[in-house]
Image 1 (cartoon, rainbow, N blue to C red):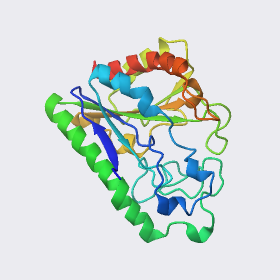
Image 2 (cartoon, rainbow, N blue to C red; image 1 turned 90 degrees about the vertical axis):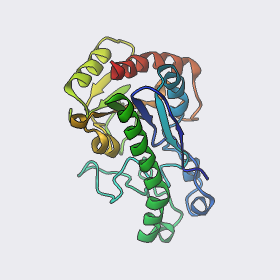
Image 3 (cartoon, one colour; image 1 turned 180 degrees about the vertical axis):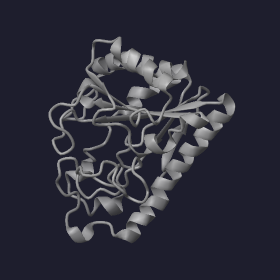
Image 4 (tube, rainbow, N blue to C red; image 1 turned 90 degrees about the horizontal axis):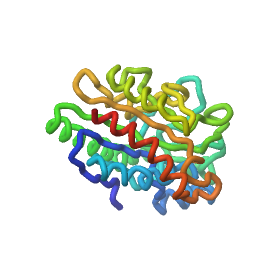
Length: 260
């Protein structure tokens, strides 16, 4: 199985979609609960949402095929916590966003050796591709913006209280991008009225945003976490074309602001 798919663009913008994949290999699927085989916590349809925008802007798109239940590409390879003190699903999750076990039995959960195999087989290839594409674009343009595209159900009690804002922009509290880019993105959000939003709220940016965002060397990183109810049905996972078309109208000026 291919580990990832990369559509190389010409603009200094790389859209990374590390939770877009939903495939669970048979050997792992045999050990997880039937409900987990649906890969419920996938960032459903984010590639479908972003690809028309990427094509219009000439941006690169990188996405995996495997589910985050296989390995979470937006976590550090050593497994340390992104949000210390909060409940998390981890590098190789054993629970879902509902807090329920993913595996049929505790002895079916991956041991340290299996975790390392998944790091070597899935995590490293994705991050190597990410690094190489960032290096290619930076060499061509002198700077590059890494856009981390994510989505999640609008209500996940294990992770946050109440309903999530529609648009959740993360810049690691301003550390992962330049002040100028953060101001431009904030201005775009302030100028629209269709969606609620927050900047550096619950989702400030995961490992990829924090690790690769180096504005001092010309690599800026931004994460956008979307509430899934704005482009799909959160129960059936069904795509909603009308909602998605409207949401793209809000995302496009944010991406264009990265290219200014």
